[in-house]
Image (cartoon, rainbow, N blue to C red; front, top):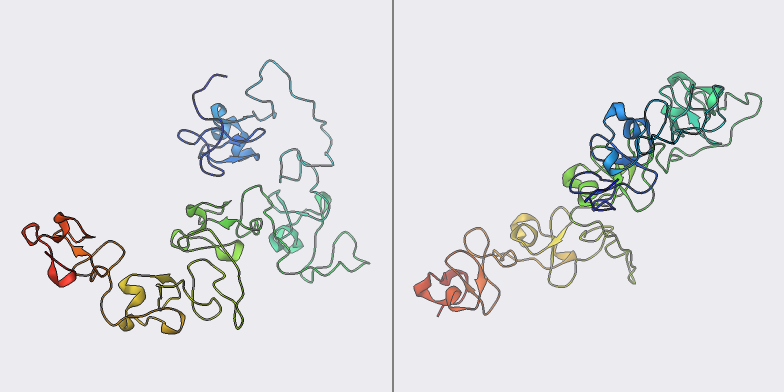
Length: 310
């Protein structure tokens, strides 16, 4: 099939117009996400065949209509035919996983609790004291409340699915990834199901003689440490150089960075609401710091109260 779309996605997990094709073996859903479940792969659910594989209800690939799909027995399969699915027409979950009321494999209470409809014929099930229903005469091994460290549906996370793989973030909409849309707290990142960050997805961990330094890049304060040289630690525990970070009146934390009682310039900006330019720079008519004639000449509107002027 000829297409001018790029062969790989530019945003992890995304596909379609402006993003490109899914990795080999995956389907592009109606909403432009890569995956392998019915919601991604069924033509009847809007699967985009130009950006990945698609199947009809009989699991025959739409990209190879002249080649019949492998025959699937009418009897229950011992493994799932669609990754993450289980139950009638799909089969059993992998060893150690439970088949939920809705036919998905996983390890959370929503998957495994008999009271929530766990299907014991297609995987393990437990009652409320976590004793296996498949071996009532033998206590089940103790399982931590944080057992679900990976998602039960590829790429999904959150209530009923579990945590993202290590190093990934769970987005507002319940998808694992590493982009700003997944990881930014301001965009609804779910910290209980993966990592979350404010303005960066990079984490680092170093130790000093007395305490652990910043463990989330950009964070500061108790339990995180000091800001880099020349930066201020805001009342909310983030490093920066703006008035909100540095002003004592805004509860700047002086023990973790520098603080000031006068307005400081947000990098590059100056004037009312921003503050003064760094030493030796001029504040232009339009509120930007610089050194050229357009910034420093009074005839061009240089603001002497926020920097030098010629």
